[in-house]
Amino acid sequence: MSDFKQNMFDQIQKNSNVQPDQIMKVAQSVQNADFSDEKTVRKLVKQLAKLSGKPVSKQKEDKIVKAITSNNMPKDMNSLSKLFKN
Image (cartoon, rainbow, N blue to C red; front, top):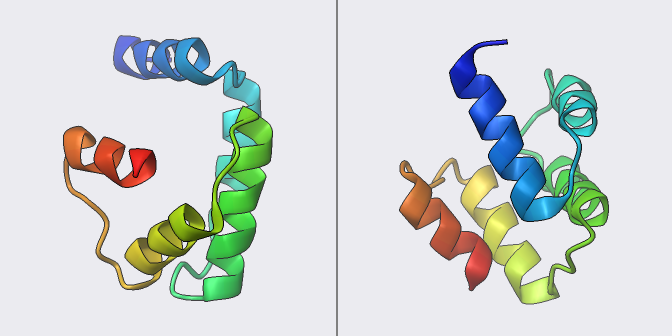
């Protein structure tokens, strides 16, 4: 694994207590997913919330789903962070 990937996984684990192997399982499960399908995206959001142990309000879930399904995801980490905090 490259240093970049390892650092990224270390940071994710530090911030969320989610193990890298769990992240890889989720990534593999959605490899061919249709991210324009609202049901698919909602299922993924709920799965990730459960995995991280962090609750996601209905309002936040709606905002995330809308951003993903409309292909309007933030392009930088700062903007992405704001999307998940609000």
